[in-house]
Length: 259
Image (cartoon, rainbow, N blue to C red; front, side, top):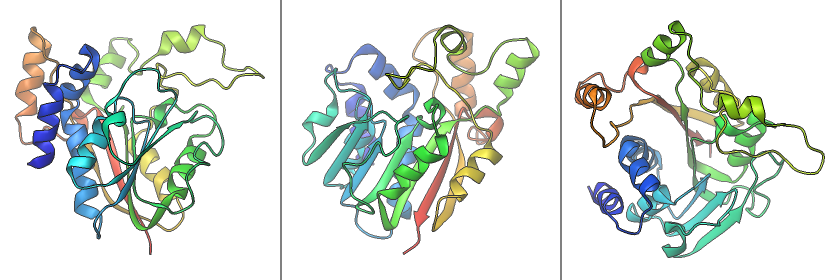
């Protein structure tokens, strides 16, 4: 309840931009699911957590409400003010996730939890290497939560039948050069690959000394606007099967590093 109240307070904060407020509301289940998974499966009191692709800092703010005391926020840039700056004992890292060793500032096995939310699909260079670098900093007995889009949905099946793309950023992908000898490509607006559930679980199981302790799906909330689509989404969200694969646009995996 404490974490839920913290999320509600954030969603109503006048300091949030309109887009971050909408994301906080629409992805409420995803934010809460990640913190729930961490609190549930971490077998000791959490001290340090690293959020890879922390963005506005919503997840770290919720981790603070859950009792964490040290925070690592890694993202491509920090040009915009975020909630991260208001957290105690925070290390903000500028990180290009298409670089090898993008977390070199963080020692091996030094954090209790790692969170990677909606990042893997944006990695062009070496997606498995991205996961391995996130895993490197996790301590024995620690927990890592990874969530990514779920392309195996009923809505995406309908889009394909209608001849429409289901992935995000296809136009940007087609119009932007990818290879540059002086600059590593690192866009936030292109999904280079959306992994199907069997592929995703196979990838995370490859991490050394990893135990896949939970996996599942999470549906997004309806956007706060009028129209038939939001009404249908609100109705489905109340159904007991709302987090089934065919209706959920997010998939996640929870891993523990063997002691």
